[in-house]
Image 1: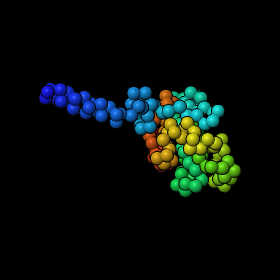
Image 2 (image 1 turned 180 degrees about the horizontal axis):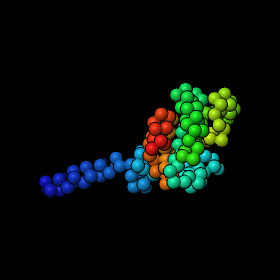
Image 3 (image 1 turned 180 degrees about the vertical axis):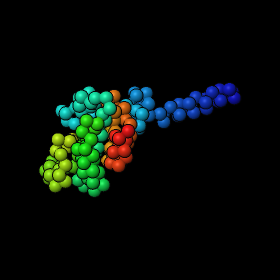
Image 4 (image 1 turned 135 degrees about the vertical axis):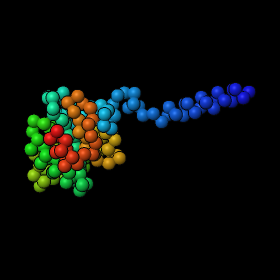
Length: 166
């Protein structure tokens, strides 16, 4: 009887430990440095290392922001400035989660950022991109290499500039 109880407890503990494993561990896709980035899709626009024709030595900076979030808006302007100086080393993809496209367009104009880098995700918090990058935990940025591997998360413009000098 003790053996049956021991096996039952051991099996229960084993089953419980597997319940804490993230599905991303097995899919090879994740959100931390060293893992493969989820596919980047904004409505019908698909943006990935392959779509951007990223070459050896180039990186993608995927930045999520919104005009109602002051820190993310400031970061967007600063990353835009880094992207302008680092053409050839960096592709900048900046995705806004503003609730209104006019607010997005006016913010881009007022902040004087290059509209070519800016995207408006009309699906907002219901978009696959928002869910794939778990933005309900807060807006973020990701530095991704040409193979789609996340190199850094929530990097500062200063750290990005330093990393690109290497």
